[in-house]
Image (cartoon, rainbow, N blue to C red; front, side, top):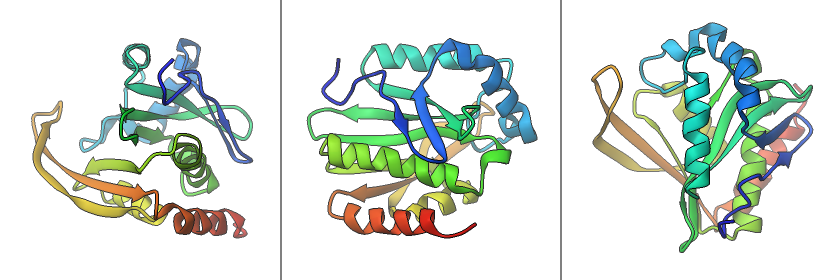
Length: 198
């Protein structure tokens, strides 16, 4: 077990439960990926329904190597509607990235994603004692950037020509973070968001 662990971590709230990713989630996650053609978006990496088993295997391999803690994101009824991870785990600092996240359109624009991030951030800062939590996304992924900024994360900068995407284009990566000193205000902000009537 890594110091930032355990790898079978489970986080639960009112609107969402983050459960350890398992090959048994493949069918439900394939359905979630197909919803709205998420896997066809060129600027993000959502696994295709046909590639879901391979993506789950990839994430579980990284879990076994100690560099990722992958979750299936489940709605209040227990239905898997997406995936998220703690990744790029820096045990020494400590510091983590919350990333490789996607959610089916039917589960977006509600409390599910806000609460998922609230649970993950609380665990990173209050249990692991992280100095910072990082978020990364394509510079042109406006929806993702707005969601990250709504959490209270601050833009650290843009990594130009950071990586090559499967379609051959080059991604500029927007890097955001929330630091330990930011966390009390961010936590209050997220709690306020979750308490608002919808």
